[in-house]
Amino acid sequence: MHVVATAGHVDHGKSTLVRALTGMEPDRFAEEKRRGMTIDLGYAWTRVGEGPGATVLAFVDVPGHERFIGSMLAGLGPAPAVMFVVAADEGWRRQSEEHLAAVDALGLTRGLLVVTRSDLADPGPALAEAQEHLAASSLGTVDGVAVSGATGAGLDELRRALVRLTATLPSPRTDGRVRLWVDRSFTIRGAGTVVTGTLGAGTLTVGDTLALGDREVTVRGLQSLGDDAGAVPAVARVAVNLRGTDVAEVGRGDALLTPGAWAWTGVVDVRVRPHQGETADLPSELVAHLGTAAVPVRLRPLGGAMVRLTLHEPLPVEPGDRLVLRDPGRHAVGAAAVVLDAAPPALTRRGAAASRARDLAHADDPAAVLADRVRRTGAVRAADLVAAGVPTQDASRVRTVGDWLVDPATWDRWRAGLVAAVDEQARTTPLDPRLTADAARRRLALPDRALLAPLVEAAGLAYADGRVSRPDAGNDLGPAEAGLVKLEAHLAADPFAAPERPELDDWGLGVPELAAAERVGRVVRLAPDMVLLPTGPAQAMRTLAALPQPFTTSEARQALGTTRRVAIPLLEHLDRRGWTVRVDGGHRRVKGR
Image (cartoon, rainbow, N blue to C red; front, side, top):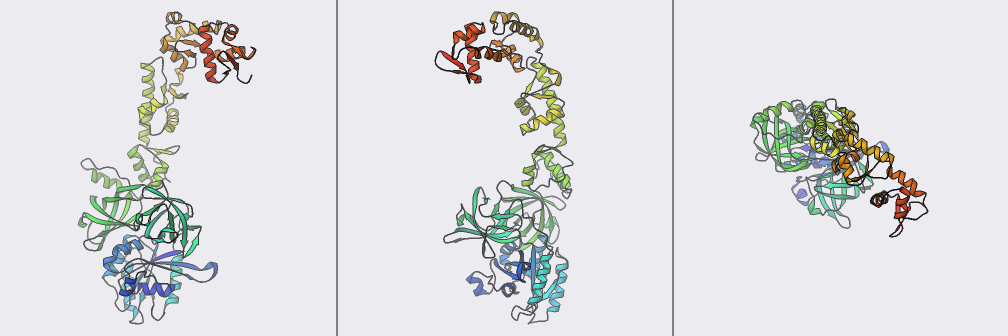
């Protein structure tokens, strides 16, 4: 399907032309029929040709009167091509200029000129004048066709011209995230809430969950060209039956979005191109049109063509979006704007606006845009940048670490800070020279623990058992090492003769020293000041497994050749590990025996 919007002065025959092409009535309201003037958006479609090679055309008929320019922009905004209509007997008029200003502001480059009512006047002068105006816009040189909606003259040639026009449209993206701007909402008995819009990219499927503001809705059904569909790919006019919202809760200007895939913003930095005059001539209060949304904005000049817009309501915006800035006082297009940054930094310092304008001068360099965005926060998930519409293809100026993109200066600062933190830990706490992962993350303010391991490697440090240290840290306990060696010799001679407090004191081994020894794997603590060698529990299990099952605490104590002081906490330790199982109050057995 190819979607084409109409444009042109009021009462120049846009709706008559669509009716003649499609056989459908685009003017939906009785008031429109009575007045002979479109006051809201109308929709109609047709097929040109037969069989699978037929070209499907869907028309969005927009109002021409200046009082309804907001509705015109809502219809024109999402459309990829425009059919510009001028009447042969009236020629170029004021609203022709306004509509062309909107087309130009939206950056539309695909279009067709149609001169209507050619049965009432020579179409030549109107055709030449209109082509001259269009050539100075984003449309450039376009085909022109003279027709008569009343007699049907020229309609076949127009259909051929429309087929040629749609053949030049770029192939749409049919995968990835969706943003459907709603242009109508209504209720159908037995179905509930239905919204319509022009799907510019992605694919909608029955059963999809979509975000509507701060809530989620489900696609209950889909229609395109009046037929039910299980899925509708872009580009298409589509009607979406929604579950999860009342018709009063959704309307023109809302957007159906892929959940979590779009960033909402109330501030954007843009490059503006005034329709007339200079940037400085623009009023500070305008209305920004994006898709079918219309939001009041306040302008803050940054320098040159760069402007910051503060939106009265946040919108799902991405860099590259084209806005039409309309002056509501004059009912006229004030400027075109292209979004350069949808999450700009705050301007708090003197001269920050001018500096920001200089930064935005590089907005056409994707690598520079990415580097600037990452630099502001130090590190950001690539998925979050994609959701914000920031191009991530050229990451040559940032560091890629897993799912994260990191500013090189920030990475170097983290690396130096980690080395300093590890050395400080070893200097101030020699019994515990290893920095825990959580402490390292807090010290560096790392946004994700997943960044720590690659950072440790880059810093030339060691990372094991959730702790970071110098590679040569070893298991040495500094001042407590001599006492620990004596403890190890004692237990090597008698594995279950855990030293008592006086002996430990003589060796300089208090609770902190024993805890440090356990952290480096030199001992196993049964209690704060009762330890065995790391091999002790396994050695005890071999002895206990040889006993008749189940066994008593006394039998275990005798088999291990130890005291009740050691036997009871040792057996409880084995219970916690799941190696032994209590049978009753006085008996245990080795698990599996």
